[in-house]
Image 1 (cartoon, rainbow, N blue to C red):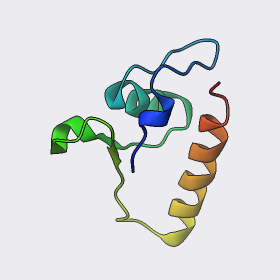
Image 2 (tube, one colour):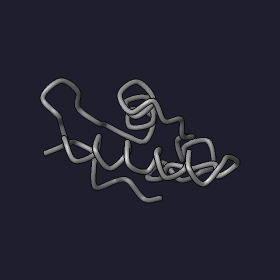
Image 3 (cartoon, rainbow, N blue to C red):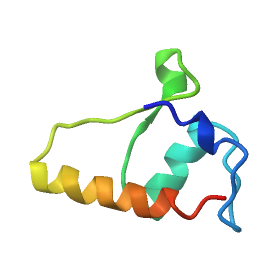
Length: 72
């Protein structure tokens, strides 16, 4: 997922400067783990794992959407 749109954005408490920042922010705030794209050669992306139930994926997507909506 390309997340460069969020680079330089802030929620008032944190500023996202790259995929590493965003993955840590989502882990700490939304409690959803993702791998920064820097680990796969694309620093503008995050990688998701779908190795869980549909219910957990649905909940994770909800949390991600709610968390990303805070950025301006």
